Length: 442
Image (cartoon, rainbow, N blue to C red; front, top):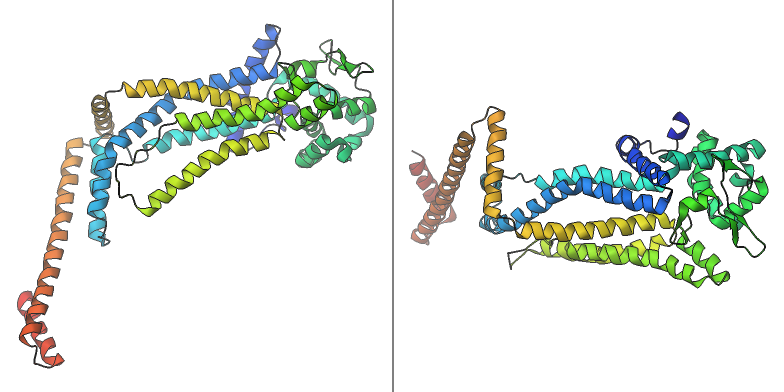
């Protein structure tokens, strides 16, 4: 649908992933929930998150296996680093790199082994966030429902009441600033995006101004109607979509706390507070369950220590930061964070059990066999590469040793001639060194 496309992410990397992969999955999940008479965005987000993380689980397991192998390789890698710690010449650096490559080859892995999994997963997870943040753009039924409201608004005053909203309708004004570019390029899509981020309180004001209360989609009323006490008399489609355990997940926790407190609905206040709190707690549990990189060198350098300290601070800060920003974002995003963190925690427990039972030696053997097959497929003899690598390493080591021996001879000779000619002039000492060098160069 071309009309809906402009509200979707148009990035060159995340856009296609969101449009052609993740968006259709979420749409099918919502269609299924609607078919079984539970058209609920919160439940759709939870199921969507579970499905995506299950699809990514093989990559996660590969990444964790690599981390386990890295722990086993670490003593050998650190021994190489220690061996060449004070040797900065080119020959020594080449030897260090070659020996490091041999360790990775021995275990049948690549130095960039974990990066490949991350490079695949990160765009998918970022696109996942984009899809959930703009659900009407990817879930046809929800987008079409909002479209009915947008068409009525545009036909009334081309959305000017919305576009010129002030702080008395803060959620509307904030959304207008955020989506100004979309409003300018495609008014209908821009209005849909703004309505998707409008709080329930502000939606009531828009409904009164534009007379939206009687609008329907597929024969069902879109917006809820309220009595004089402010209680719902008829629940509309949008509130049905967004109602999750009695909470409207289209609202922010701050908006919900404010309106629920004034109406003395204290259970809603508690629910709104729990969303950001649970988002922080579950992410903190993720950090605790995640495998920690082993450091087998008690004399780790300052740079490594600083990096570990920074990571520890980041792991503490991020859950707290998530709770803070979660208060000002729609609770649907908070539910996504909670669902994602819970799924990752369960995954991590299962993966940890799997990894603990793993026969590392057998895994190394499999990795080496896979590596050799890849090389053979490319027309390369693995044994030749190993022999060449070993020969190159021996050559570099021999050159390094010769250089060190020559430097030692020069130092020894210089000291010897200096002692013998202690009473002579500087020029005489220089001539003696020159004569020695000439003899050694013949």
